[in-house]
Image 1 (cartoon, rainbow, N blue to C red):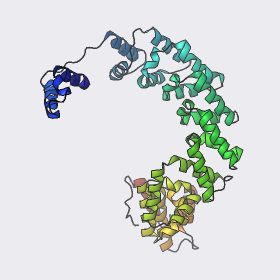
Image 2 (spheres, helix red, strand yellow):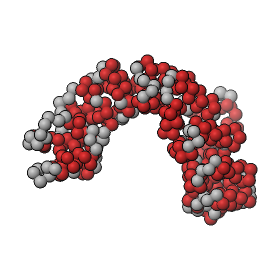
Image 3 (cartoon, rainbow, N blue to C red):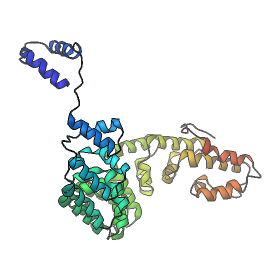
Image 4 (spheres, rainbow, N blue to C red):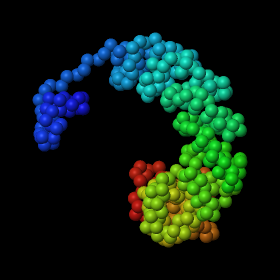
Length: 395
């Protein structure tokens, strides 16, 4: 509406377009045009009324959602929409699935069902996928209906299944977590990256794991992927180890500016470049923690255990633990037992953190709860912490 009004002002005042009046003159005329006349609401068309009624009655959308969906489709007749609806229902789509599809991508109800909807569902049925999987991925991402069966969906599904050794469950896990993978040109994205990994000595059995759990890493632009793999090897990562793949997931998932910001953050907190790289090699996930998490963890260990930053650099796994749910309550117990001399032998707090919660509770909380009644209350602190621990939190 604003653009139409602007053009109307220009047409009625051609001298403005010719440059003989100032921009201020144009703005005053535009203001007059917009605010001196009453607004009128365009009446709904029969087509939009038809679509809104269909989405509300047949697809289960609420009246506002049905109107919103109707505004995004030119439904001249309900015959196509009803055909699409029948096809979806015949493949097991529940009304909740259909409502999601209608709200996300209403235009597919204008598609010819037998030509553009059914063959894509048949592809997954023929490949042996369950009805629940099929309804889940298409209702989660109905844009799958818009991709070419011959150029995208079929070849990409075949490539995925081949790469995963025919493991249908692994393929389902990969697709459910990343439906967008079926819309890419996997032949020119994933295959070159797989060859790069093989060339650098990554075990063949490790590649399907990367496809299953982190397809985004394997679908990077091949040039960037090659540079990331070379960087990892130059740092001393062993491609035959699992930590190599973990590091690769982190590295390709961080844009270069984000990587640099994280390096600067650790440097500002007292780590040298060598310590940061060493920590990354030991536990790559330390580079994807939030700045707040990193600062609070550094502060907690520095203030409560008097650790120097370099000591944390030797144990970067500690950044993976929740401060509120694990570190603070475990330290509360550790602190009480240490002061009472009940730990028996000298044991480091970092060793306790590596224990499972059940083992820690059994060995250090339940065992001494009669002797030290306040122990249970101290450990329970994690249940009561509704807000984040401040960076200067000291027990």
